[in-house]
Length: 286
Image (cartoon, rainbow, N blue to C red; front, side, top):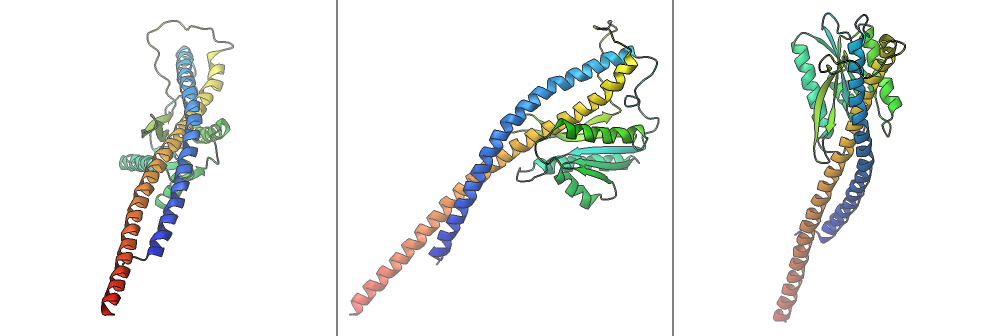
């Protein structure tokens, strides 16, 4: 027969866990609203940045920015993987890490040399164990995503591309679709490829002092904005996944408490029945 004291202790332990998961779900929901607003504000800016860059690049025919020019040979590929710093968010990190690892395998099968840069501790911890020789650096988020952090990462990978240490840079991150859906994706970050303008219509603005001068400022900024957008998408997806995971955990604790309570009542009923049988047996013996 189960020990009533042990069952009561386990019910109390599960109730404490339920309080933690419920609190974490509420915190993740509050952070998700703030993170989602940041993503919705960043998306139009990033898209307009690409469109403007395409217009300026179309007018620049003599010289091109080094971040726009593809390398002659594609021998070395750098993969920038974006994940979160913390867990307890379901399969959110596992999905993007698995996607990045598969991408590295495919590029290595083509005979390309692959190196990794991680934005987020979870991806860094994984690849530090699985691919230590290919890992170049890990950049933890350390709290809320900032543009300064994204710009620092973008400048680092861009410097290696310009120096010829990498021939292509791929960005692997989670795309935030909604609170229930986050899907991993890959994007060619460098060479930066703005969308091709439609037709040969004249520019809707005048460029001063020259397109080349504007590209010097605009192209690095566009790369930074793309990395910043990926970090924001990852941040929103992390909070959404954690909210969903904690909501599921809370429901599981409710079911477990109900099951343990039923088990406790049955054990208590069995103990009472046993005592009654012993009393009746003793009375009959007298």
